[in-house]
Length: 356
Ligand code: ATP
Image (tube, rainbow, N blue to C red; front, side, top):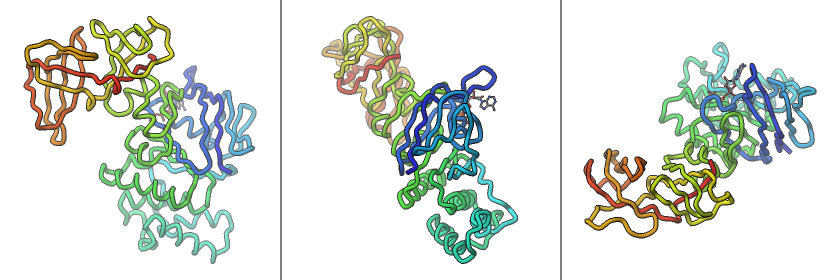
């Protein structure tokens, strides 16, 4: 069993907590993505998992085995984990076959078995036909496939990946996300995948842990993280989101300056506490002002401050009362000129209140 349990993990550098009380469980056979902005502690968490650093507090277990705690760490080579970085780190003087076979040689695997295992894993990353090439004769994507094959051939319990696709161009990066997910589905290996790219996390992971300032803000499936953000940070980090700050006036409504926004679901916050209300731009309903003022729940009037044609959508920035602004996207055929008055509706079932 390769279930990972991380409890109260802390690591500080020069007085700053890079990892500040992380609690996470990764199920056996699951892909968990650590997603967050630069400096939020993703790589430090992964180094602690790999055994490159010792935690100041907390522990990491795999199954029943404690791998890291302040009293000591199991060295990286005894953890049954493989690690892949953004630099492919394949050896230039070895062929693809030799690169992949290397780890088996170190482990004194019989020669006949080496050939069979290397061929099988090269086949799985679609590189069998290039086995005799040198890295200089490969594209970036092909080199990263070699790195994947080399990590997988030793049959680790856990695969750790740190921004593995950042060095690839945009098209290849998109393609390789699906490849990594496919490889997971054929091997069933437990994976922890560090990225700052939300699309990459959504394609590859079963669950995503959103990190901010060394802490885990929220863990959930891509669907849960997108649809049901629990904090203002999660809401604004995943996809585009309007976030209006205000004060809770009842369990389903936030007063944002002169605007009261109601949500369908209630929150367990005390009336009067600070809260934000979130709505995605594609859920804001924009209509032409027809002379009469806004009426109904969450109806507002607004003025178009900017409109941009983006081919598939039209993107609007709209000024609303109280000096606030909203983003809205519409069908590209819907045109409201800059300066024109519009009516806005924020459907209550699309509005979500979260604590600050
Ligand atoms: P990125 O996406 O930019 O790689 P990250 O989320 O992986 O960022 P970490 O590399 O884990 O973030 O760094 C977290 C914090 O800890 C940062 O403020 C960083 O400057 C600091 N830090 C990390 N390693 C060290 C170190 N060896 N010495 C001092 N500070 C460090």
